[in-house]
Length: 119
Image (cartoon, rainbow, N blue to C red; front, side, top):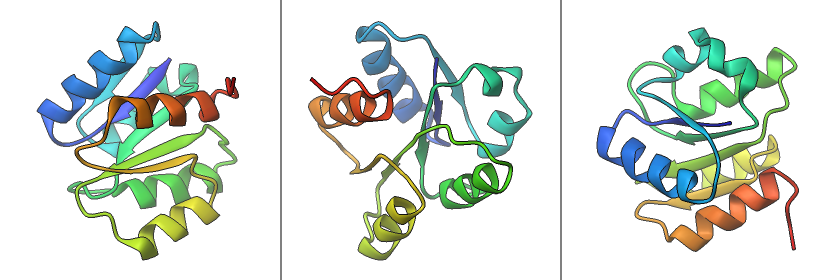
């Protein structure tokens, strides 16, 4: 199961469509808080999250999951691809940092890395 967290509904729908086309089940969430409260959290093999969202940001979500001992791989997507943020989330274990709009192949490569499916 791949969970997709983005406050932009069109991005959630498009990303979920791409991920489902690869044969994965998806769950979508409008906020990090919704994801954290969801029973789907326990079934999640990978999280794709926006960096900047109202409420808890993707960076804050990553920090919270790490504090809780959760090692689910995270892929970040953002309209504001700041190098400082990329370095921060990568140092904390993110498997991808993609600028919107991203190419489908870039996301596929990140998912493959997250799920250790490198060819």
